[in-house]
Image (tube, rainbow over all chains, first blue to last red; front, side, top):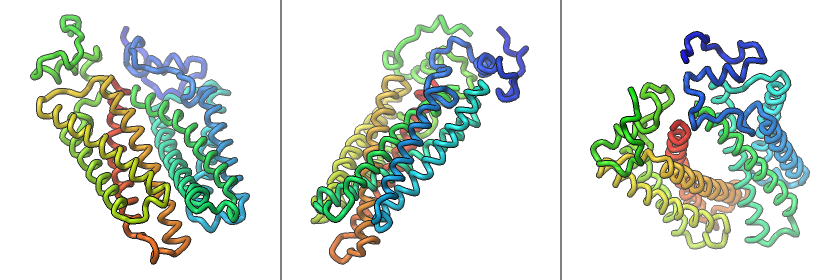
Length: 187
Length: 187
């Protein structure tokens, strides 16, 4: 029952096949703790986590592409901000997808509190920026389409599509963030 | 050291003076657990938690009042939505301020997982709605003020004030949400 015979080592310093077992014993908590969530799909380093990252990247990229394809988006500050924020989201999701893919290929466990903290902060920042951009664009799109009824002179459909893709991208970042934050808090 | 002699009872069924001690032993976890956060200021049932709720309520109320005082806010969907979302935030923060005040006056502990879950979900929903309303209003305000340069015919200052108050109110909901979510996850 004593954990002292096992050295408390950083998970990345270990040999690959032992990693997940050692990490479970590394917390100094009994293994039957009811709130401990190990390897919940969607967390960093799981196949569902990788799928979430790829979907976030895909929707953010489509949103940027559709918005950038309109000729008059630079005249509205909120649309310029949407392109900037969603480009950042693309970069972040792509980077984490590569990290997840690496973790899956070499079977490494991303259950280190510094890495989880970094992922949680990054997810919180990018998802807040993405959501703000989507809401601002939605406000403008509704103003042009419903309040002014001026879709004849504007690319309403493209603005709506881009805004919707931005919301979907934000919606897909949320589970990544909550699972990372939860596994960080329940360590 | 054995916890078995103490019955594992719902905290609210207990006599008032024992409550905080019983709750600490109720989790079945050792008291020196490093991730356990007890009575961190800002959590439900603490004086700082009550202060946060009152500030959230105050800023949301000012935001609604300033926006509702402009004559032309109903012509823009985003501004009508801001009034609705911030009114909901007012009601939620006021309700939780009353709960916090009651918990402080009768010295009851709000460290029950159902209550914490309800508070976390409510905070997540109201803060998301408040942030969405603030971002949409900010998008419109910037469009009117900077992109159209049409502040002569619009109440730009009032719109900006209302939007800023909405952002402050959202900023004050975030610590409440994160502390509640953290204490829920680390139980």
